[in-house]
Image (tube, rainbow, N blue to C red; front, top):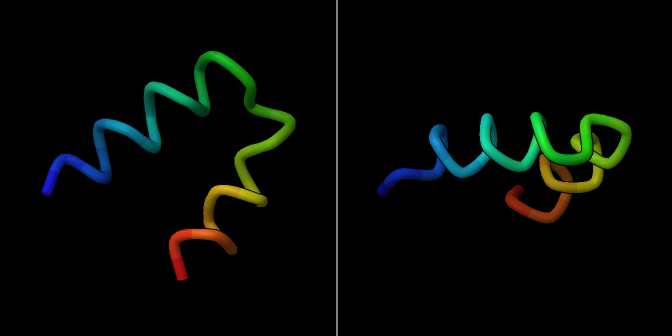
Length: 26
């Protein structure tokens, strides 16, 4: 599962929304 890559990719695109991604992933 490339979730780490996806996380890094999205974090680079919109780092101000990265906490939402973490919450959504959990």
